[in-house]
Image 1 (cartoon, rainbow, N blue to C red):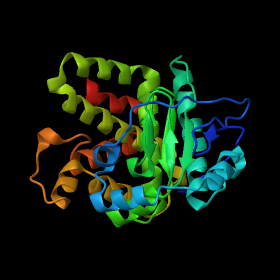
Image 2 (spheres, rainbow, N blue to C red):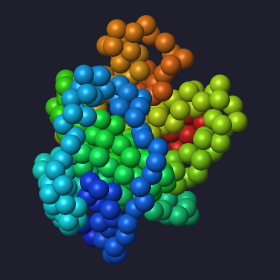
Image 3 (cartoon, one colour):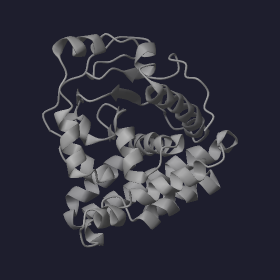
Length: 287
């Protein structure tokens, strides 16, 4: 996907310690107490051995961490090809979604992209996580957390090394940011608490809608899509469907245990957003 080069004045990024590196002002972020130990499985069904390897490789020296903490916004986005790509995508996502909120008179706020690699990150309200957690969104601090090393794991999991598979990941997490801004995320959390029996079903709907929003972003930027991108996205969506992950782990397919939807559902959600380029289509998951 031919994304424009990022401009750090148009995005919010920070370094791996969770301290704010936001253009326009300093800031800190508190350390939570809840450990997000299960995200690796529930988000992308990470292989246990790969998770163990990631945990073992997550230790950093104090001097190395201090060096990382002092990175500027520009340095954070230029740590490597994956970081550059993520910052490019973040700017494109901001530029795509902000006008949509303005169009309907809703307040928009940019998320913060936290890029780290092989270490531990602290969030405000969502606790601490290691690189084994995989990409996730924290509504409390509006943070999209990505260990760029996960992209190597994603390529192994999906057999897909193309850039669109990686862009799908960040666009999906951005979809959760949209749900947070619209208030849907809070409504779903409340419904899950009131009716725990429906918690999994509601979570699957949330994830499929986030997939749909990822497709909407791509659809609204179709002129930037390159040959093979759409196929990459579909193969990635298929590879991380709950049924495929359960089958790969040698488990019996159990729809009641789904947290993100089947491969077919995830591909359909991504495709619905992409073909329509209309976020209203994504309302179907809570109609």
